[in-house]
Structures are given as C-alpha cells and as structure tokens.
Figure (spheres, rainbow, N blue to C red):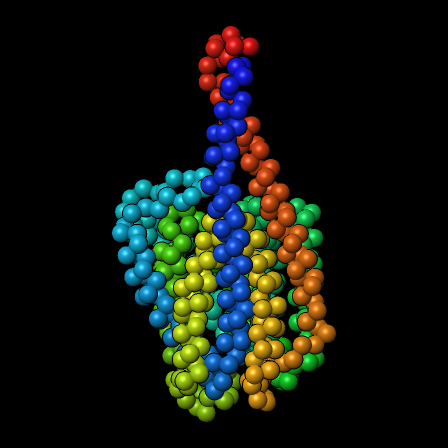
Length: 381
C-alpha cells in the first residue's frame, strides 16, 4: 500500500462523516429548542384554558396549523422527493401521491397518534395543571425506548437504561410528591395523571411511526399530513363533547354550558401554539427524529419541567392572586435534578454510539479501497 493512500482515505472518510455529524448536532439543538417552546406552552395553555373548552382549543389549533403546514410544504417541495442529509436510504420513487398511497396506513397511524397526543395533553393540563403535564413529558423516553427496543429500532445499553431510570424517577417524584402541593381536586389530579400516561403512549407511537415516513417525505410534509388527519379526528371529538352537557361539564366546569365560547386569552394561546408549538416546535422534533434515536427524542422532554417551573414563577411574580391557578416552587420540583442527570447519560450514550458507528464506517471504506483491485494491492505491498 502506498503512503499516500492512508491520508487520502482519512480525508475522504472525514469529509463523508462531517455532514452526518453536523446533522446530529443540528438535531440536538432542534430538540432542545422544541422542548423549551413546549415548556413555555404549558403555562400558555394553563392561562389560555381559563373558562375554555380544551377540546375546542385543540381543534382550533390543529385546524389552523394543518392548512398552513400543507401550504408551506407544497410551496417548498413542489412534488420533488427529498434527499435527506445523512440518510442511509435513497428517497422512495414515484410521485408524491403515489408515495402517499403507499404509506397511507402509516400516515393514518401517525396522524391518529398526533391527535391522541394533543387531545390527552390539553385535557391533562386542564385537569392536573401545567407543571404535572411538563413533568410527565419526562416519562416519554421510557415508553419510547421500550417500544423502540421491542420493534428493533435501537438497542438498550447501560448508559441509556441508567439515564432513563433516573429521568423517570425524577418524573415520578415530582408527579406524586408534587400533587400534595396542588390546589386542584384529588379526582382531577388522578384522572389528569392517567390522561398524561395515555399521552405518553401516543407520543411514542407518533415518533416511531414518523421515522419510516421521514425516509420518504421531508419533516414539514410529514408533519402537515399528520395534522390533517389529527384535525379531522379532533373535529369529531369536539362536536361530540359540545353536544353532551354532562361531558362538557365534567371536562370544563367553568365553561358555563357554552363549549364553543373562545375568550380573548384563549385566542392568544392558540396563536402561540399554532406558530411556536405546531409549526416550529413539532417541526424541530420531526427534524431531530431523522438523525437521532427515538430514546433521545424522548429524553429531551426532560427540559420541559424546568422551563415550565421558571416561567410559572415569572407569571406568579408579575400577576395578582390567584395567579391563574399556578403553583409556587416546592421541594418536589428538585426532582428535576435527577431528570437532567438522566438526560446527560442518554445524550452521552447516543454520542458514543454514533462515534463507534463512524469508526466502523471508516474501517469499511478503507478496506473497500484496498480490496478494489486485489492484484494491484498485492504488488503495492
């Protein structure tokens, strides 16, 4: 082998690996930004849901977000297949409508999971409050990783398992211990926690089913199709709840029998979730979901409780009692420390895994260069 081959091969390998590394770093930044926006949105939802039917709140958010995302997607893509940076697979052939037809069941599953995620989230915030809602997001990596490992999307390592156990322990501590500091009724607190558990199942299905879709469609298109399905399902639920006085009273006792009334504060909250939640936040999550493991997508939900607690204290300090029903900091909130330690372990595990795979790819590329022409290879030796 000539002495020039080794540095040349190293440069090629580095150039090949660099776009993947940039994509992963961008994905981590996008996931962090998304969960900061979601953490702020927890408080926005609590304030905006005063005397508001949460189902109608979610419906208006999705009805506005869906068409806007579709228009942006059509404007950007122009029916051209996406070539994803760092993707190991080529885009699926065919026109966009053929691709939609081929993936129709997965698109329906993805949209249904998004509907369940948003429905359970907004109902849970109404019943249990924003802090409990943000803490329950930290349980996402548990269900996400269990599903991903069972479906062989990824493996389970000691770092990943330890980080998830720590994050979930912090989540459980804040949820259970923190319920003693809440002013809401015990029944609402229990039901709200159950609803948030269902939301975690839905978000896990959403993230995993989206991975296959992202191999064919760009993130904004995948998100637009999911919101289209979710808005149809949410419209059916909103109509059913509003038509039942008993169901409306159980879900929104302060709506005074009018499930379709939208206060001014709710309009501002809907605007926040349309722009910063659905269009920016969920797009960042979809972007990150292309290049990192599902467990990493889930573990970034651990950022939400800290952001929510900080914003809640700001609102309490700037508002008059009863401060929109928000709670002050209590000892249970220090469970967020365990959550962040768990987040760090999972991110380290992801980085170690990508580094190991990059080294294997470099070795394979070097071997392939040496084995192109066995005769010439033997003479150079």
